[in-house]
Length: 241
Image (tube, rainbow, N blue to C red; front, side, top):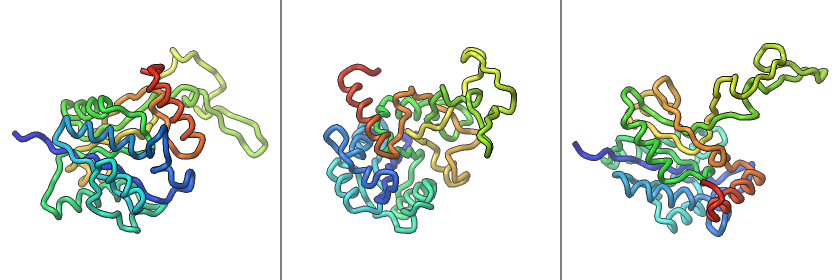
């Protein structure tokens, strides 16, 4: 049996309202997207992988090529709007390669906005998917803390609050409540066949790969960028594991 082929897809459109130009904004001396490209290339070396950047922006394309990613196409404008979905981009990439006579067994989508993930994170998640019977996809998740539903409230038009969980305010100790996870966005991996059938990474056959809190931040605005840059610097200095 041949080794499964993996497409590592990095979507990065030019338009960003939260932080204009964020994908190529310098972070600790190199463009934000370069962190994800370098990690993906190392992961691809450990499997039968190809690293591709899907973008509509020439500046992003130039940076991607500079850091040795493939940019075999420019993303159509209709797939680079605020209303465009990640799944549209994923299926466009799979269709492009299929027309070129190349197919993949797995697709790993890596957002440039989560540079903290490591090669080991990606390979461990991919391995979890491959070895779990019945599983079709795996996504990064992180345990909630202060944002646990038990600690949330609703506020009415008169500013009175009520428990979001629909009960009286009975605050339990963390040890007394079930763990709840959120989708932290660092990686989305699926069997390619499943993506075509379900058009989603999320369904009843999706696994959750737990990521630590410091890796769960995503770049959406300037504050996020500053937080992540500080965390990566701490990692470089050996202050984070």
